[in-house]
Length: 242
Image (tube, rainbow, N blue to C red; front, side, top):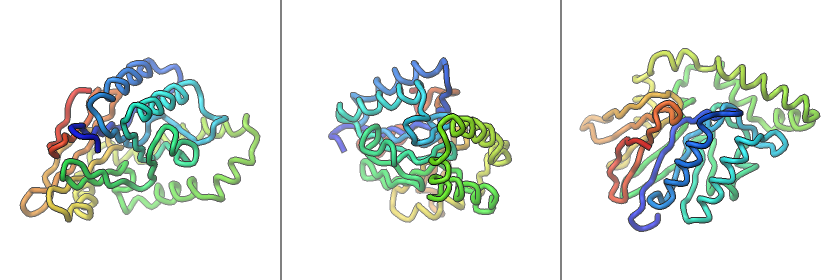
């Protein structure tokens, strides 16, 4: 933790090819560097991101280069894989990112215990999605996919992206507050604890626990709102315009 610096959480961005939001997002990342000691990207940075260099496109490479440059200037960059991310740690941990996790990260800051996760696993009863997630990220699936010629893999990636647009649609039509509270309660044992989630594309702050001391922060999508969550060096947390 760099003295006097802040921790910034950035929600889903969903950048795509020829995206008009690409340059504003790159400019935003560069502006973060002076005041942010650590930036946590909460997953789904792109509409689809497969950690294979030969499948990455110009919009991927532009963001990757900017993140790597942020690290050289002293800002830690962490990534939590979302439901549109595959094998990012293999390709970019140690380059664009200090740390990559598929499950969630402890991001303690300013005396505050913070657990961050993408949010796609909040619903324990969504067995169909959980089965797809487990299968699509398995070593066998990756080995099979990697053995296919590049042109066919690219077409398959496009098909996967179309499929993902339909996954968890029911969870996003209405914010599942009860499920979020149940999920968060498992990570709020410490004093001043907080849980940070992405995935749902809404901005929420929920008080949790019998005394209301625990907090859940649900991040809005960056592209639609230009907002993020900042945790200051003394542990204060607030949503703010990016």
